[in-house]
Amino acid sequence: MESLTIISSVLMIWFLSQSSQQEAMKQKEELKKEVSCLRSELQQIRDSRDNLSVQVQRLTSEFDNYTELTTKSIKNLDKITIKTIALEETCASQREKIQLLQHQLAASNEKLKRADLITIKTMTEYEKQKNTIIDLQDRLAEAELQIIEAEKLRKKLHNTILELTGNIQVFYRVRLLLLDTDSGGTDDVVSYPTSLEYLGRGIDLTHNAQKYSFTFDKVFNEASQEDVFVEISQLVQSALGGYKVCIFAYGQTGSSKTYTMMGNTEHAEQKGHIPRSLEQIFQTSQSLQCQGWKYKMQVSLILTFSLEASGGLSKQYRIKHDTCGNTIVFDLTIIDVCSIKAVSFLLQQASQSR
Ligand code: ADP
Ligand code: MG
Image 1: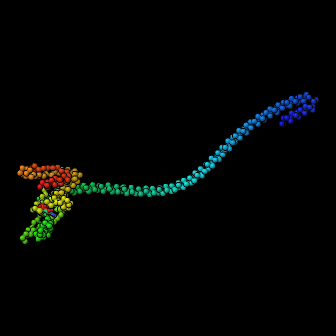
Image 2: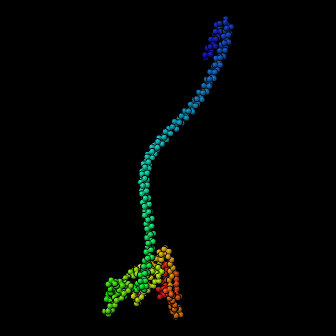
Image 3: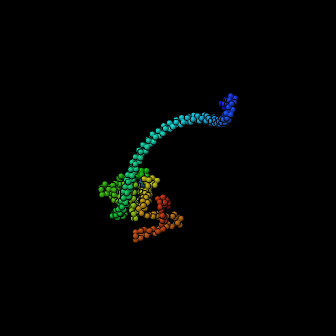
């Protein structure tokens, strides 16, 4: 618009000043130049306008994009805000939990400290006890050695006593009266001296108003199996010490020989001297084995046969005494034994063939 006005004013100027056509022509040329200049300016402006419009379009689309992104971002932000609130709540509760756990940890640490103290105390106690045990063990070992020595001495002394009192000892056992099978009492027949010299060793028997006094190494007055065995066990001990020992019961039928020697094996307190001796032999030999002793047990039996089976002849056994004091009975059945059970079995067999 601006350039068109300029052109019309130029034309008017041309009509008005015909005289100065030359000048006008000049001016016209100048104006033409100016016009072309203006045109090129216009073109430039148009170009820049087009450029700007392209830029505007691009910016608009960018703006749209940004708007869209912003909407999305806002939505995301909302979501994130919700999440954040939730996380903050979780965080708060976790913090509470952490606090609680910290308290618990502190309490546990306290307990641990106390436990540590107790452990230290227990350890000290344990060490003390261990030392006491070691000390006791040492003393025990020493005592055991002393016992072994004492046992050796006891054996030696016992055997000296045996040698001094005589190797043959006679014990007298007075049998209990059985009311259903025995008649009469013993009070008026049997009495015991009360003097210190004969106490436990003497017995007085009265017959037809006449008193007969006897003295033995020991008199058992209605004693139990156990009471009698206390004396017998000393002899068994001697046998284990390498001495030859023989125990036998002598007396009239019904006087208690079998009861004394075998007893009633079904009742522990009525067990006789043979089972008691066997128990002692096996028990003591076992404990002596720990001290280096070795024992070999043999049972000798005389097996008799019925007259019919042996053709009416009873077997003769040769007996020989050698210079070392050994007595040998030929043709004895000798069986090695290593337990009470085995001996008990043989005794049973023997008693059956008596
Ligand atoms: P022996 O073998 O000397 O012939 P026993 O030992 O068989 O005599 O004894 C005869 C009976 O007397 C048996 O029944 C036995 O059980 C019983 N007897 C023997 N001594 C006692 C005692 N001290 N206590 C109880 N009963 C006994
Ligand atoms: Mg008998």
